[in-house]
Length: 379
Image (cartoon, rainbow, N blue to C red; front, side, top):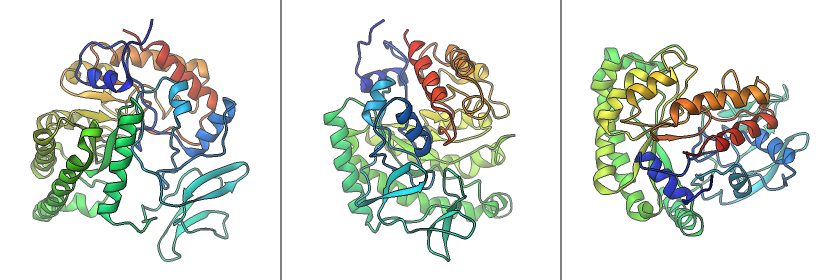
């Protein structure tokens, strides 16, 4: 079995359900397909690779930029689009761990041994021995939106011209804010508030994504939108209410992108969200991630059978909730083989674990997952 395509071509064709040499593999293209910087340090050390220059593009989830030596080692086909922070510093949270983080991250250790970032009045916290910051996202750089997009444009051109990786621009809401209790209540009691908010958000997002398309749309392959629609046990809200208040704005966004470019729409949504898939297909969403197969009503075989011809599954390749961090390498490999056997046939699938690899996942399990994925990737 030999590869006969570039990574970018492979992902594009798999998404279009056209013949490919093998199933594409992703590690770290999105901030929900990546790996904790702590786990990444351990993985690089396990493989005998340098840990001196681990970059952290998502500071609050504390995810590592996956370097090209790791992408090549595990035959990955995608790369995160992040231009890097304007200025960085080395931060040593504990032990041998040292990471390159944004210079603007104001960090201090509190009396409980937790690391805090921000200001005493408003900050996020990483508990002692923890792996990420909890408490919301805070600005870490003083940069205008136009300057930010220009920096992304230069990085997109570099990735396109100097590599053959597939990449997407991340940065938009999917018009649903289900972690906000007031928002959920307003959907039922004051729907006009939801409509007004989505109208404002839609106006900004269409203007902004128009700039993205003009500045660097020719160098990227997709646009990511993000809204968690499900939790562990079921939908965050009534799918009927979502169809009325939110879906029209998703469709407006998808239509604009599809009419003005050949970019694909990648939707990140966690949890039990099967009931929303028909509406997402009608709205024009091309790809869903992370395919949380451990949530209620998310049986892999049923998802592939019912929707595999109409939407791409990007994820669902390894159960991170109960297997990747808790099982043996052999059990991880078996889980991966079983899930690939479901999602891979007929293409329309990009391999990725369910959401990010957590900081305490053993490197042996990560190797088992990715090596097994490649071994079972060829058609």
